[in-house]
Amino acid sequence: MIKLPYKILLCAICVLLRFIVPVPLFAQAVKTGFKFDFSSGNTAPGYQKVSPDEVFNDVKGYGFDFGSKVTAVTRDGGKKLTGGYVTGDQPFYFSVNLPEGNYKVTLTVGDIKGGGNITVRAESRRLMLEQVKTNNSVKKLSFIVNIRKPDISTGGKVALKPRELGKYDWDDKLSLEFNGTKPCVDALEIEKVDDQVTVYLAGNSTVVDQDDEPWCSWGQMITRFFKPGVAIADHAESGLSLGSFLNSHRLDKVLSVIKPGDYLFIEFGHNDQKEKGPEDGAYKSYTERFMLFINKTREKKAIPVIVTSTSRRAFNDSNKVVNTLGDYPDAARKVAADLNVPLIDLNVMSARFYEALGNEASKKAFVWYPANSFPNQPKDLADNTHFNSYGAYELAKCVIEGIKSNHLGIERYIIDAPPFDPAHPDPVETFSLPASPKNSTIKPDGN
Image 1 (cartoon, helix red, strand yellow):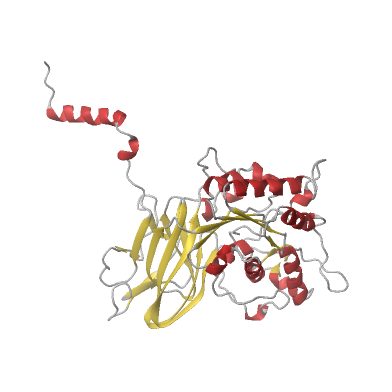
Image 2 (spheres, one colour):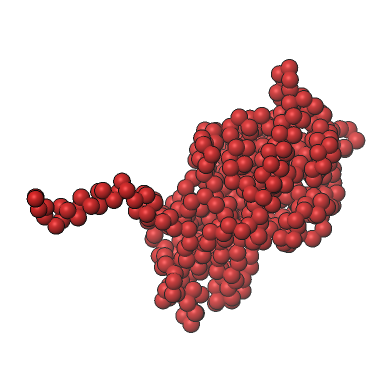
């Protein structure tokens, strides 16, 4: 009998086990929970100390990202987690590698010996915290961020457009943007949560998370009005119709992760009306595809909600908004009535909003800016379809009102949203939101 050396025998056993024992037993569990301490004092128990010079890389899996420059401030006498913070003269980002899912993000913000003012966005400019002010104090605040990947568990993947390949929404990490006149970040906690009601958004450029200033949509503003308990998963993309949303496997993606009690908000029309095939039209392919979306959602025991398309900014001589969407808003209303689906008539509410501002002043809700308002912008921007932050914020309030009027179950998670009448919008002069660092003069797909 041949006797093998102990080390060779052990290696042989390990190799054999690799074929016998399932691979997951050998694979390292993916981490889905983190606690980061940005203070300059002693590290709090259970937290990972992060210094201002820790730059994100895939090996470490966390760090300050996208060229962010931050400084550490020490506060004597502060307790752990509040004995200091990081801040910056410019907006800064912090990213963490995470698998797909919903995450509860808890931030400790503020300065125990000074003022603070912070606005927080997640991923591709989803507004999470709006101008939180602190005065010689700190606050602990939580919100939910949805992380998604193109891969579909049932097979295949979402067919992303070239413009989406660099989006923070589709990468492998959670990215947080810290902005404001004095953003003070003391600590960050991240926890995967599987008990959230998820609201999936299917739509076009008026719904999508727009990457760059000054473009914005209601889909990336509505996150600001929900407390933990609800996650917003915005699967919309610029230029899409119901048909192209289907063909790019985005509905497949949603259906692969949606669970009973979740919602699918559906807003299309702007690009559907440009489809001119023999079977196309508001009461043909548009209606049929709407019905398909609804039936597929209900098969998953989830709740479909129809949102009519936002009106374009088009006024007649009587200072009234003209319908430029043909029969498509009416077709959406008819489907909602025929299938007993909750309806949020954003088409009507957006028109009231524009009319309340007036023909000229309503430009301030859209991407209307003179040349040189932004870097590398030699020409005027004059877009009557796509919104800036103010317009998107007001439309998000309209959608919130639609949720309330339909008494949807997620109504109980709405925060900071008193009754809103689009005929009496917030004055644009009083609206203030710090701009994100990224900007572009390239118009989003679709019109």
